[in-house]
Length: 137
Image 1 (cartoon, rainbow, N blue to C red):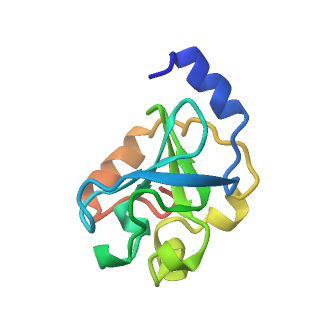
Image 2 (image 1 turned 45 degrees about the vertical axis):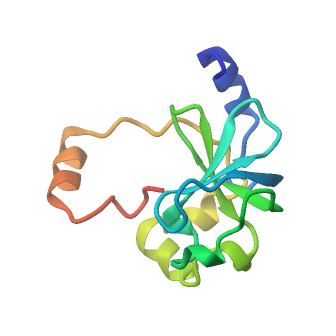
């Protein structure tokens, strides 16, 4: 684990869509959680189950080397990734992005920053909705 200051320094150099070659280091429960990826930083990388194919048999196995893009990074000391190639990406990724993160194309190349805190109205709307707001990762 890195210090908060080190995490802030690492994040300053990260950009959405930035590509890293990574090695899958752990697949704890295929089709249930996601995969952990070493991308050569002092913090871990993680691909959420929501970005991977539905069938865990289509996921990369431990030891797989592939390209991954920065999808998100927040206060957790972990870089959220998405597979670069379609082989390990959910087949309906384009539709998924349009529904849950329509800002993705515009985010690519932008610095990774802490999200702004939710306003009380945004929090109330989120709690009433069936899912995250459209611009959430």
